[in-house]
Length: 119
Image 1 (tube, rainbow, N blue to C red):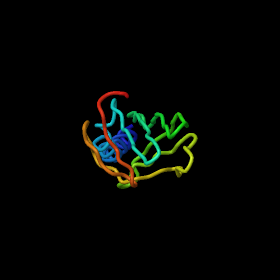
Image 2: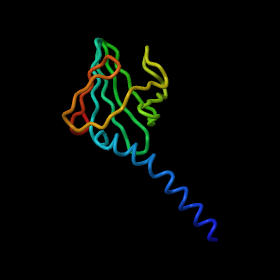
Image 3: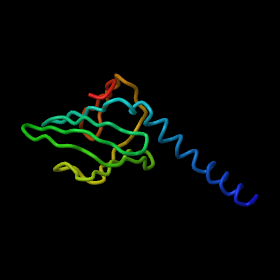
């Protein structure tokens, strides 16, 4: 019984750093909208704490629904689309950093803004 308790405790402690990294980098995104501006249109992405995301993308007259999972892979945020938008790699990875509502930054040649709420 002690072995099982020690094993469970060890697993929880070893997993804590990974959860802390995901949480500290992604916390500002939960409940908010990441708007990605490209030369042709924009995407609105909504990240969930359960490592899923949803969103919409529009370019010219094309409107797409986005859905998939996300994970932190080293210093990158990787999105795995259920069905990737045209021209997007799957998975699509980019450097990640913590951001707060109102922040704007460049990612893979695109301007990204974090706005309050679901928009």
